[in-house]
Length: 605
Image 1: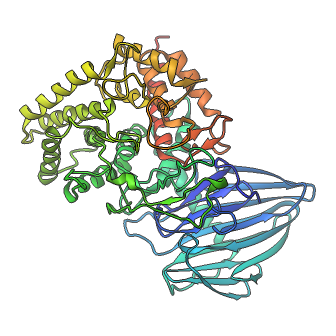
Image 2: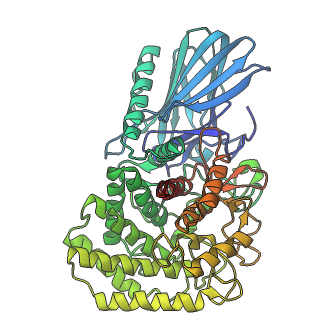
Image 3: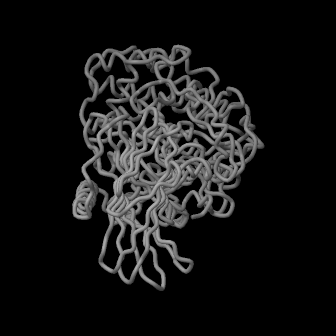
């Protein structure tokens, strides 16, 4: 067991309410329950000695490992090969599809000897409430019960367990064709243990989980050139969506660094308006109408239900159930991934002013016209009030899309997305004949365009730039042609793309911006941003640069991990950095794939 495996050295499993990471050495080193944003149960990825983990793996000095997804599913298979035999661990979580939060979440681990003889070792060392809670333990034969103040967990196996302090260990030796099972279930305090597990029951459950995912992905209408990558990204987005509310989280994890040893370590287990809104178009492109509808409904409820800290109709992120309170604190007792501290839980950026979210929200609602008129009269009134507020508020500095902590600026991207908000609002008012102050919205839209093209343009760079009266380039502006602010083949946009090529692109990978040229209030540097690379592909394809777009897109595939997943960034040695896997990266992969595929199909033969 590596002390800190590479961030990318994991597969993701989940039950549509929470998720876990499984390393390629058979270790579950991240799991929070009962929800994505709940306290951790296993967190050795953030503190090897004290975070807790669940190991089930062979122990052989000459063994090698391979990890894969069972095709078109969220079942992770970890294969171990040695001179003595070949063994497999199939990890999955039974799916909770309903709208009611479940109080039980299970990690099901089925081990098999494929050939020869394989001994599997088990270590189950949970550490509840981010390793802050003490638990009691009862062990009886092949079962164990862990009791913490706010959580009870049951471990049930088909082989004997032994106490190791407040943890348990076990060993099972299997010959070719034999199987064993270990099931770890988290429930409410005092919850009854699940039924005793058997190999036959676990095999049936494994088949049911595989069937669920394969049936779901078969409804995709994408049949383009990169089907495997697109469908893996779609499954990942589904895994990162909280089924009871329809809200996606930005990532399954917290605290994983953008720079190893640095301070850029954030909690991403929340729902960003921006990320979720952009996912609507990606989901609709694939034909996943139900998922897109659920999020637009969630977004409409936020518009009706909440005002931000300064009277804003929306805040930039929420908990998965819509709770706006995300107080940030530091877990001083965690050393952080390979010493990357501080480890933060919660997210203080939730109080930031980021005006671009209104453009992304209206973009999602307008794109959702495919699924019918989402909001009734009262929903429309909430949307109209939002745009009336924005008409008085768009012309002020904000923190911008990247949640910088270096002070507010007049960010060009924020202004562009405010333009998109008014543009989409006017379209919806006209299409559905809804009451609106169209004169006010039209003036705001036109004033923004004039201002951006005057103050957001750098004659020095011949490009749109990060913020007014400066010359710093910013990859967020790659979204500008997608929302229709500027024509993708116009001279101004093509020269902006050329400037980004010179400054932000490194061997086809794209940086967000240069922190040295535009200080963001944080120490250290970061890698290239995978989201931005896929947005670059999308922009290139729209601009007619198809050969460059395809080369960049297919080269980016080589940076995916062994099971097709992406974190937030690519580091200087090709390693993945940041929280993992990141929904924004996977939704932008889908956007790039559909745009590029359609553009290639349109080439005359």
